[in-house]
Image 1 (cartoon, rainbow, N blue to C red):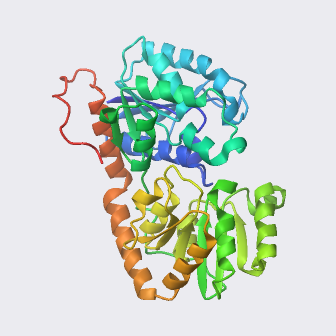
Image 2: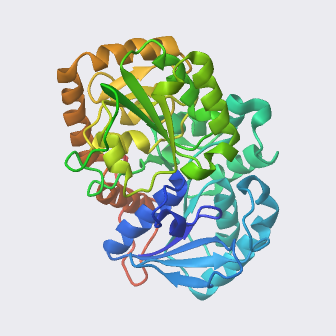
Image 3: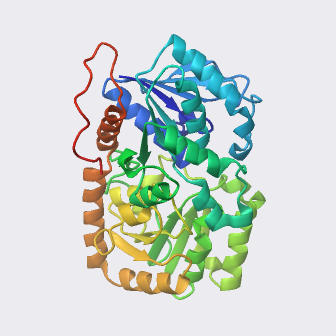
Amino acid sequence: MRIGMVSEHASPLVALGDVDAGGQNLHVAELSTVLSRAGHDVTVYTRRDDPDLPEEVRTDAGYRVVHVPAGPPRPVPKDQLFPHMGDFARFIEQRWQAERPDVVHSHFWMSGLASVLAARSTGIPVVHTFHTLGMVKRRHQDGADTSPEERIAMERTVGKQADRIAATCSDEVFEQIRMGVPRSRISVVPCGVDVDRFTPNGEAAPKEHKHRLVAVGRLVPRKGFDTAISALRSIPDTELVIAGGPDEGRLGDDPEANRLLEHAERTGVADRVLLAGQVLRKDLPALLRSADAVVCTPWYEPFGMVPLEAMACGVPVVAAAVGGLTDTVVDGVTGVHVPAQRPDALATKLRGLLADPARRDAYGIAGCDRARSRYSWDRVGMDTVQVYERAGAVPAGAAAPAEEMAGEVL
């Protein structure tokens, strides 16, 4: 099958480097890799953000990356890219008229808009993954939301015009139904985890206190790292390592890093909080293995890959009961759910878990089993191909598929 993967602001080439890139970069890279390994011809279309980038790159994983000329060839914040989506759509439409894919899979709302516009003239089926929704972001960030005013309306357009929606979690399904997408056109296909990289066996980073908590993510307020810092005040003999943001040498220039450090000072736990900065992906498994528990306490989270990576390493997860975390972390089986933005509740759950090594081991074993059986990229890749087929994708020269499968991808 020839697959056109569209990711306007999140290049998979960034995810394939050694630094920990954003979730969409990683998702597109891993999905393209596993689909290529299965024999599909995958081409990723992403915006050119550097004048020195070649027009096309063939990756070691087997898929191609085409750098689309849309907007200035330099980094531009994604919330400022909307005016350039017309140019993006025209480029990929011309490309697809000359080299027609069997299916298009777009990621994020602007990619979806460009894809449905470009695919209209050719009848190519479009599968779309939102990754995050504008109305959810606005609900939680309100005035801090920098998305274009058109975003929510455009997301409704994409949801109605795409042939199929691949939602990453059940919470996203309910949100999409509220915005008018028919349930019959939504399948749930989660993000995946590299179960060869993230394993229980291997080196663990050294720790300084009796217990260690680890939190990983971009240094932005919605990730809720301040909730974990506040909880630490009533959890003795325990350190908190926060990994993410710029490299350690530039953390002093990061406003959120400074805010978190000031909060730790006010809370009286600065001597037990370490901001590690950017952690290379090759070093992340060792950091996760060093934890007695991985803490994920965002205000909201469309999916969240860190809990999966921790589970694959055999580490229990304490997660806010929001978004995709309610799917991946099974309360009382692979970890514990807590209310968002409630450091008192978080501290209570963590104290109980840290005092019970047998329960931590049981959660770790169950989490590893769940990650490997349900969330491996091979499994996610197979589920994604089923969604392509349900959208009407037919490889050139193949017979038309039978009627839609009776079962739903869950």
